[in-house]
Amino acid sequence: MQVAELMKTDVAVVHEDASISEAVIRLADAHVHGVPVVNHRGRVLGVLSSSDIVQATAERSDAARHPVLEDISVRDIMSTPPRTIRPEDDVRVAAREMLRHDVHRLFSGAELVGVLSTSDIVRAVADDLL
Image (cartoon, rainbow, N blue to C red):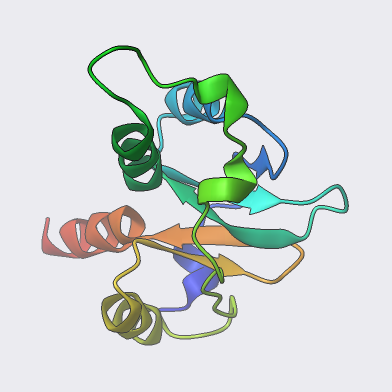
């Protein structure tokens, strides 16, 4: 099975200059745990995950006040480089790449073509079993 058969092509993204507050809303609205981070040309620069947000919040908060998420940009906490895979690659290759780099999503192309997540792979395995 090819990556293209499982990857999502209608992908939520967040701009590198967006605040963490904006990114949190984007993640929640899209019901996802991570999004590609793009520049003004739509080029994928990195990925922002819910784990990145939790870590940044924990590092910047203290007992006296809440973290100021408006003052932190996505660029400051995103994970780089984004891991990519080609749509024509085998899903097993993608799964090995995810395991090797401990990532939950792979992107197709610097100009975003689609996203393959671990959830997409698990769903395909479950469909085969049922």
